[in-house]
Image 1 (cartoon, one colour):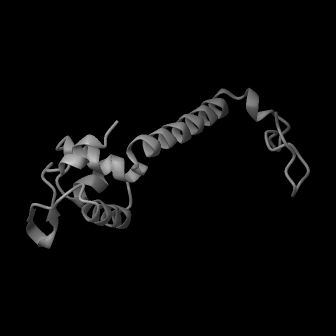
Image 2: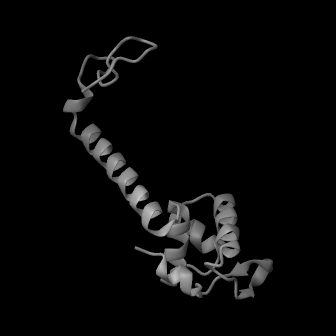
Image 3: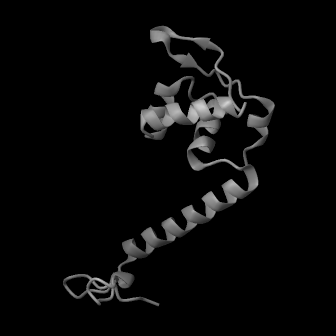
Length: 122
């Protein structure tokens, strides 16, 4: 079912050229991806209480794919400021603990998650 937008009164799935977006395969795949992503994030939050960024960071640290915020940013393409705030939140919750300071005074997270951090994954 499609709905008219209040601004234009037109069906939002109809392109300016008159083609129906619902008939375009890539549009349908995009909509499916968005629906599955919303469902996965709901399940993740319900089961573990983690947000998506928290889960990604814990996963990379636990699998020892990343050891500091720079590695996490490179692998996840998440903004470094968001990573910093998320790591601080995870530290406050006792899910991760920085083990040492590396070059440039950066915190290192060598895959040492706390027991609760290891059990929050799905």
